[in-house]
Image (cartoon, rainbow, N blue to C red):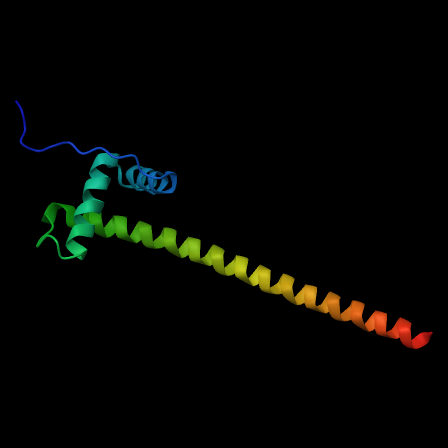
Length: 110
């Protein structure tokens, strides 16, 4: 029996597909269902639709918590990378100062 709903297909970016797959596996939902829930939640958040189907609310809460964990992990990695970069810059500054002092010492010694 034909349906009035139209099928919408899209090819997500690799990182988006990775998140969708992770959520699908953890929540035991199909990729299609996860994408549907994410789209509905995004439209609701923008005020473009007035309500979310109540049956999706528990899944949306779980999906948002997973996304939050993914973002927290990403930001922690970014902070660690920035910390390492700052340490490297400090080391470079120390090396430059050491070379400058060494060069000054060599000139004064002559």
